[in-house]
Image (cartoon, rainbow, N blue to C red; front, side, top):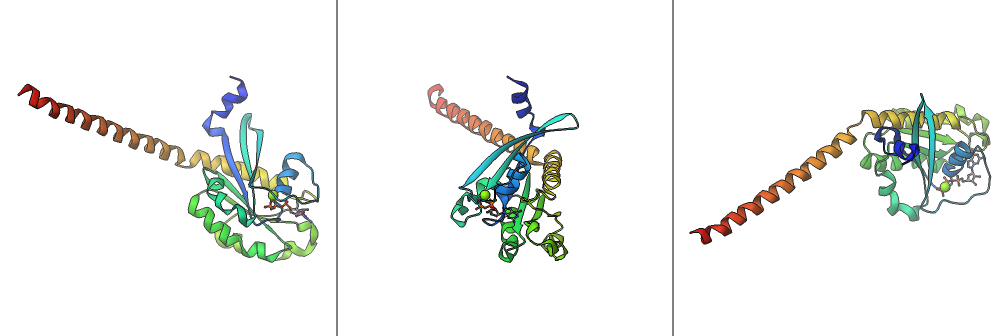
Length: 215
Ligand SMILES: Nc1nc2c(ncn2[C@@H]2O[C@H](COP(=O)(O)OP(=O)(O)OP(=O)(O)O)[C@@H](O)[C@H]2O)c(=O)[nH]1
Ligand SMILES: [Mg+2]
């Protein structure tokens, strides 16, 4: 087993981060900007999901991140539960040029909280390169919900690295402090309990069956 494989099984240092939001807000372009430091303006809408593996060294420790670049199109709705499953942080993106994508944030946020009530969520206003005055506008959703907020541009790279690095940090600290791991242990114990009960009831049956013979 290679070192990298070993790291993979160190539960503390692997996190899943999902990128959500309406179609064409720039989720894929942001991922490409961060991971490849590139930007191609043409649009190819994400089909279902694109998974990116990213690793980084923080304080001498390797951190492995699964980035889930999800599909914003309505027709992939049924996939949403799998996006949320076991995610450690969420990057929620809207497009400053299309107000409807901002208005839809509460819908995304509500759904996120149904599946993941506690994970950190970053609210991201993308495409600020298209309108320099937009950063003076008041997008109060994040503030109201008490969520961190970023103005970014996938096209020129403004704030993209900072936002993703913060997301990784938040995911890691969530994982360290959350009760997810204990929840899993408790579930295992509950199952174990059931198994032993079944076994003992089996034994009861055996002894009952045995009684007529011995009588
Ligand atoms: N001006 C500008 N355009 C952007 C920026 N980011 C993305 N775009 C444009 O927005 C369009 C959609 O970007 P995508 O990254 O494909 O959008 P998406 O959110 O992944 O969409 P789905 O995969 O359908 O959910 C592309 O044509 C990009 O050129 C940006 O920072 N500035
Ligand atoms: Mg996409």
